[in-house]
Length: 250
Image (tube, rainbow, N blue to C red; front, side, top):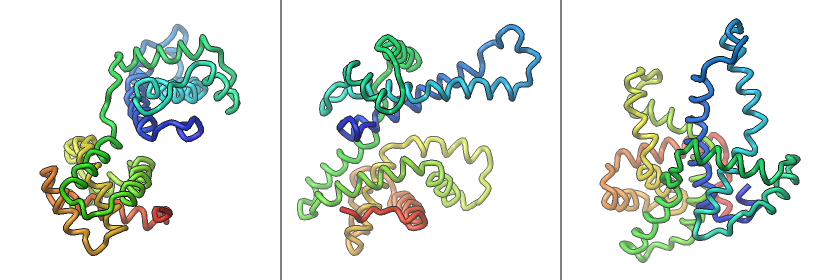
């Protein structure tokens, strides 16, 4: 959606963060709400299926509402007004009114309790690259910055697989315990680690010989250990190689 609407990539990642947070809250509310009259006799699974079927119809509009909200909060993108929104959704096969758009946006806002500034992973990457450019001006960062976008996109799309592998590497167990998984949640939410991991992967692809120095510099900037950065990079690279993701198309 952000590509079609020519929005800044930051807006897309912001929208993803809004969507994830909203859906957690929305699904929790739906699944814990009292059952409607007459539904008590239905098996729990059929109730869940009915809720998900209902949600499936609204999901494209919920996604768009998150994109529209993110565009309104961005300093680098134009705002998607309701006229543009109606035309765009119609081009995707979804006929909605302006009133429906407003109601969907309000539902997302209320679900997020009007908290619209979650961490943006691309912001972390960009800030770290700026610090790198200041500390090591000899490193050409133009291609690195471009490649970081592809790496971040890959990690975002393969988030579960990448973090499952990182958990297995960290715990040295293919079947981590529930306690280990619960403790690992903080790692999945660490955007500074994500940022250095993205840059480390891109650096390995572009500057193989200088990779250790780059990891050392990233460790110095953030305080994250070289081992943690290396583990993150190795796991991500393993998935990239397996998936033959075209990251070198710079």
